[in-house]
Length: 212
Image 1 (cartoon, rainbow, N blue to C red):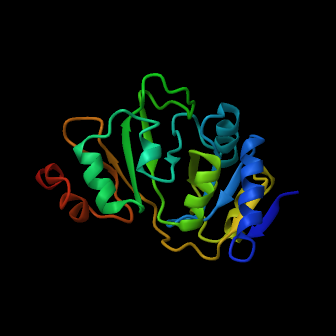
Image 2: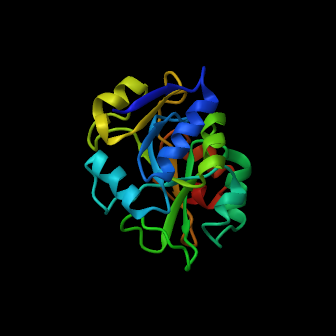
């Protein structure tokens, strides 16, 4: 049976249980600064497939990767240029997902991602502590595709049920809005999804967006 742990009263037990589940190739649900997320070891292809199966989602929609800091991003991509550094300084930790070119030698199977990878540093202290314990995690909103993203652990459990082994309860989601996604793989950055951060906010740090 899935286990639910309250991170507010048992933070150490929550990290230990979640890290053990990730090591075992299982999925967990964790709170973030946007909505609750379902997570798996980003370097375990079978675990990532379990995440996609739990969401009833195809491989044509690969999940982004959450990391603890910009240093961890550098282990996934060689493409840390001025635009990414500017966005990271302004919005990380925060509700910004950035699509960059993955390292050519990166052995990671998230689905049909081509040569790119989407990364984010969440503005949630517990989530970052967990990421330091587990390493990069493939994370998607904790819901079945087509259904509303879970903003409470009860909503996540009602949708994902036994497909998740550990549910980490942090109370109602702090943000409630999905992250904004920016593609930095071409000469001109593009917003793929406007979420918690607006075009105007991003354009203050990416002038080319203001021209688009």
